[in-house]
Image (cartoon, rainbow, N blue to C red; front, side, top):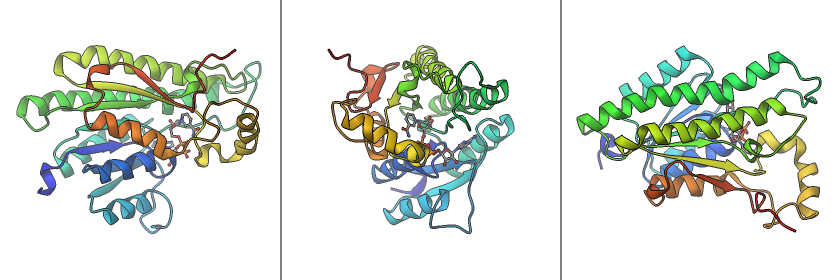
Length: 265
Ligand SMILES: NC(=O)c1ccc[n+]([C@@H]2O[C@H](COP(=O)([O-])OP(=O)(O)OC[C@H]3O[C@@H](n4cnc5c(N)ncnc54)[C@H](O)[C@@H]3O)[C@@H](O)[C@H]2O)c1
């Protein structure tokens, strides 16, 4: 296949963790990938976005890094412009970039500053990036440049689980969950499918500082599948969706959490 015939995925926050797992999996599935991250140093090919580019090239894929902050309107515009100019299409958008609050603070003490930071990156960013990409996808569909575009929102079990020491994160992810429903509804007439994936506790740099706590909880019976999730567990669901196996499930949420969400007695 010539470069421009291959489908293209734009994955935000793909320089490490879950985003990295998704980007590499999609490349093995035959996607070319735009690796977005707010941190990206071309001189460092051992870790971060340029390591991911290298990993994708190693499996025969084409990947380019685009450094941008999803919370910035200009950054989002530039990112989508780059994908359009370089690859000519986006078949799959994966809204993955997200942060935890800098400090875990009780909701009786947490600050508006932290609330605004988390909401702008975790919710406003993907909400308006999706608006930009969806409009492009609609135009590309009309021009026959894409056939079946799809959009993924990575939310969290925190969208429906109370953690009173990081309320702003929970609220941002509850918002992401609704964003997925809204876009599934609005984009259905174009055949653009939307999926929400809510990871449980996944082993990434984000959770490395609280790993011990979660290991104990898992040993104590928190999960049905007694291990932390891996980025590859989330990537497998993205892959199934990207290949069209979940096309009759638009607007739905899939939890990747080892059974976390199951009520048990
Ligand atoms: N790890 C988990 O247990 C877990 C569970 C549920 C949901 N999630 C969600 O999955 C997503 C990925 O999490 P992770 O654990 O891989 O995190 P991570 O911190 O390991 O990686 C996140 C990546 O996103 C990038 N990023 C941060 N802010 C950005 C911005 N403004 N613009 C662009 N890129 C940005 C970071 O530089 C980093 O490379 C997040 O949305 C997170 O909320 C993670």
